[in-house]
Image 1 (cartoon, rainbow, N blue to C red):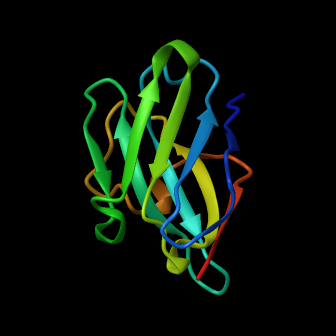
Image 2 (cartoon, helix red, strand yellow):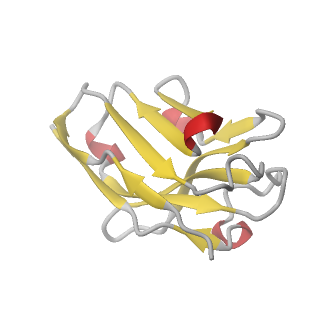
Image 3 (tube, helix red, strand yellow):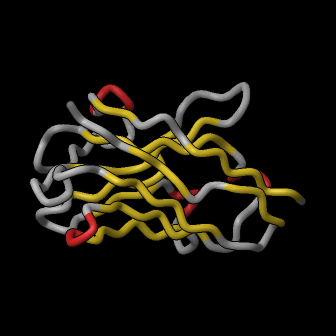
Length: 127
């Protein structure tokens, strides 16, 4: 049974920062492709950033480049998403995802690549 538990969401003003955490049991240590998706009201789910924990290779969507950083702490079996310079359009439910594969596919932004999803944590950015 895969357990992905997100935390760290909240409400901040535009320009602020948040750090999301995803506790991933032993799967960080087991080295898979993990990452973050988000879904804003009325919109489709969007891949935000993913990380292949064995190679350290990461991918992220253009809209967050230079603002968001995905990282891992193997000792804590935790995946992070550091979000800076937040914008109103970053408002969404953020989900931690696990692909079950050891590398992140080129089609990393396709939600069908991820068999496991957390329950989500809400991020709300006020203008």
